[in-house]
Amino acid sequence: MLLLFIAPVLALATLCRAVVGPGKVTGNTAVHDPSMCKSASGTYFVFSTGVGLEIRTSTDRTAWTFAGLVWPNGASWTDPYTGTSNGALWAPDCTVVGNTFYLYYSASTFGSQKSAIFFAKSTTGLPGSWTNEGLVTETAPGATYNAIDPNLLIDGSNWYLSLGSFWTGIKLETLGASTGKPTSSAVTSLATRTANNGAIEASVIFKFGSFYYLFTSWDNCCQGTSSTYNIRVVRSTSPTGGFVDQAGVSALNGGGTLVLGTHDSIFGPGGQDLMTDTDGTILVYHYYTSAGSFLGINRLDFSSGWPVVV
Image 1 (cartoon, one colour):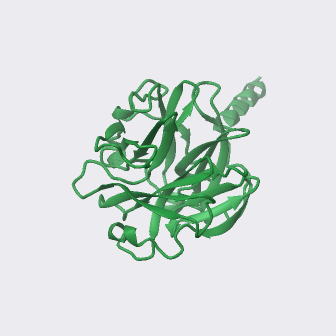
Image 2 (cartoon, one colour; image 1 turned 45 degrees about the vertical axis):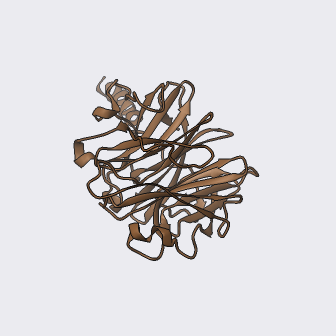
Image 3 (cartoon, rainbow, N blue to C red; image 1 turned 90 degrees about the horizontal axis):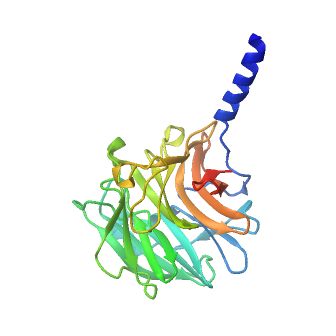
């Protein structure tokens, strides 16, 4: 009788512990803060943090090749924010509109609010093809938020940019579709935390069905296998606010339902992006192992109304 009791308990415990790992990827996948988009011809692009902003391409979303840099000769317009002359830039966000690539990206240094978001355009997405479109928004020391980690949401004719890291959290600005830049100085608060020094960043707003889902990374990045990054989500019927987690806690009061955290030999998943592909919604992120930071790709299942990694 004891053995009969123990067996199903162990089986249940195994099921409860199971967390889906990153899908299979091969080739050059050592990335940080990845953003994925797909060209009109079907080529996948991943842009990521690095000197000059790194570009990787794939024909099947599995095998990845390093293609080069967005800014192979540096990005001098960002130097006042990075304190360097080599174009060390963060957290690019790519969106393809028709045949045009839009790339928003951050320029800053760790822990500083002297930060800025810029954007660029390209018709191919490849190195040497990018046009600098200039400054989008910036913050200075003493601001209530930090202008890094941009994400573009195109919702019909409306364009929005979510951004922010620590301080008072995630913000939203309205952009002009013709300019790709803010239409006013208004900044809307979407999410904030007080726990762990307010560690929330890397926002992505993704529309699925009648809801807008705000994904963020919580806790501490960039510490190898000691990283505590984890991906959280809240949702709203509007992209401009009212986000709550699965328990009904407001995002403005620290709400956030766990989507993916450290498990098995996967540490600190975060810096995420989402895109829609032919096989559904795709979650892209980085994670750490003892060998470094790598590209994670999974599908998301929204059938319950909340995203589940599959």
